[in-house]
Image 1 (cartoon, rainbow, N blue to C red):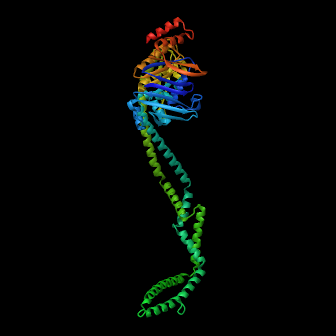
Image 2 (image 1 turned 90 degrees about the vertical axis):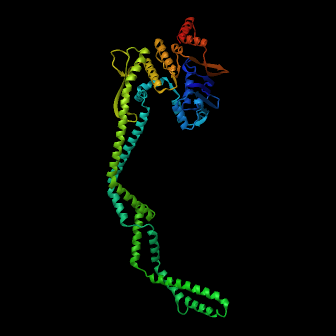
Image 3 (image 1 turned 45 degrees about the vertical axis):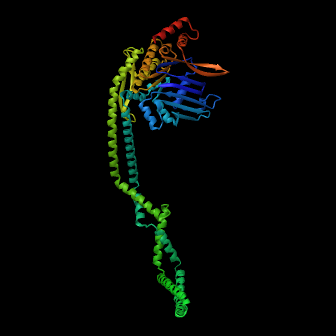
Length: 553
């Protein structure tokens, strides 16, 4: 329940701090006094878009804050999920907007986003403005009314998940079919590309190996000449390094017994001789293998040419990249070969998802159909009380294709005159009748969802007299059922039913206009209602009439 509303520097409001109590309250004021500004501030608090016009001229920022008590378990759970404390079952929501249009939102002093602010606001308060009467033209709204009365909240959650799964399965199958068809069209091309790559039997790293081999073959004569010279310098019997090194090693080793200092030199010469022998053997082996083979050279060149051609064709930079492309073609061919199996699996998944979706849709349809009787009876009873005798009201449920809200379409049919056929309520009901239908529906819905606070913004449009009095009684009854109902009204018959009466007015001070709001005392209420009855010139008859209206309450 809304317990306090604080507004500062919002439009024409410099500062406003109002407390509210339980039951039915009314807000009155002349046209243009600023009642819409109060609602605008409340809408901002509940997540409406902010702009620079929101902030009172000359001020740095505006603040709108509301406090609610006795919050329900559902809202408390929502706050806990979002790590927001709710001490003493109280919820305080605040919105701040600076002069540049940038806003911040808080719940119990915890910064939050607008999405959560809206979710929280939806569980705290419902603002019914005149434009919401247009919802009677919206079949989605009419279906939501049926679902609310039917208690389909959890069933709708389950159905929504099932419908999403159904849509996902259908999209997956459609995509797989499209891919399979496209792959079949491209199968010959893919197979040719794969066969061409596969026939080459590519090996990772062979390009680098072949390029080294080709380079060696191109310089075969130079390589052979260098190896021959090196072998001759090492192994010549007269002047070769090995021959001369053996002589040196033998000479030094011979004096070692009598000249100990030469021992180390002899050992090192022996080690060097062994190492040089190994090197000489390697060079000799390379020299023996250095014969140039024209056929091998042609084979290497042809292999490299084939690799280069495919790299250019496939815009690849290496054999590894060609192998990766080959593997992709192989995977594509495997997918083509296995497409029937894949499609069969996806078709089965789609059938299962659709079956579950249709079962839940049927359950929704059954629940909705059952709820129509209560909706029709309750709405007719309220409308008769609201001055529409002999009214007929019917909820027509028809079938449609599966959609996000099920397989049903709801339409409210209405006839206010005996003998006249039932037609869509938005087509045949007058403005006053529309207002009464919406009030009847809101009264019924508020009981179903147990929303703690409802604000009606001139829901009495198009009515007067006895009907207005009955509308006031309906809202008063709503306020007695553990709910808080606030009505912004121009009708004295409704204003007199309120347990609390607030007046919105403009005040000029220092050359500036400001919107004010105050709770009226009992004597002030008499004057206000009398003025509503007779206009600016209050007659004694209007005062007497006002007193009589207030005595009703």
